[in-house]
Length: 326
Image: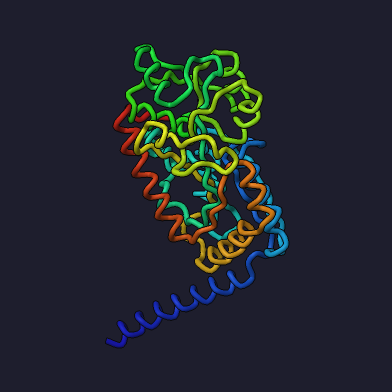
C-alpha cells in the first residue's frame, strides 16, 4: 500500500514539475528568433503573407521571425520539416491551400496532416476567378458550360500543381457541370496567364489580383469568382454559383501551424499576437486590395476548418480519380 502510494505521489510530482517547466518556458518565450517555414517558392501569395506577418511580429514578440522557403511536392517538403521539429514554438509553418488536400492526392504522406500539427490561426481566406480567353465566343458561365459540353475532348486549363487552389476549382467545376477540363501544368500564374492570352488555354482559375490588370486591358474575360460572395475589387463579376453552377464554392486558406505538442501557452501567445497583426487597418487594406480576406480565428476554429476541408476534398478527389503516390 505504501509502495503504491509512493509511486502515485512520485508520478504526481513529476507531472507537476513538467507543467511548471512548460509554464516557465512559455513565460520566457520567445528568447531567440523564430523560423517560419513557407512550403512554396518566394514571391507567391503565401510567401508575401508570411513576410508581412513575420515583419509585424518583430515588435510584439521582441524577436526576429525569419521566413524560410522550402518548396517541393505540393508543400509536403516544408510541412514535413515542421511536423518533425521540436515542439517549442521556434519552428512554424505557413500552410497554403494544398495542405488539407494532399492526404487525398498522395498515398504515402510522411506525416499526419491533423495529428502532427497544432493549429495557431488561419491568416487569410483566398479565392480564385474563372477567366477565359477574350476571343472565346463565350460571355457567361452558362455559355462556357454549353461550349464545354459540345467538346468531348474537353477545354484546356492551366494549373500550378495538384492541390493548388486552381486545381481544386477545376475539380469542383468538372464535378458539378460535367464539362471535361484538360489539365496543363505551368510553373506559375504568369506563365498560364500568358498561355490564356495567346489562346493556348481556354480557361484558368487564377487569383483576382493576377486577373484584374488583364481583364481591365481587355485581354481576358472574367466570368465568375469561386467564393460564396462577390469580391470588393470586382463587384460586377458574379459568383460562379449565381452565374449558373448552384452549390459551387471554393476558398482556400493560408494558416500558421506549429508542431504537435507545442505548449498551449506558446500557441496562445502566438495566436494573440498574430491576430492583432491581422486586424491592423494597414494589413487589412493591403490584403483587401488583392481580393483576399484576413481571418485571425482561434486555434480550435482553425482546427475544425482543417478537418472539414480534409473531408470535403477527400470526398471530391477520391470520387473523381485514384490517389497518386509521390
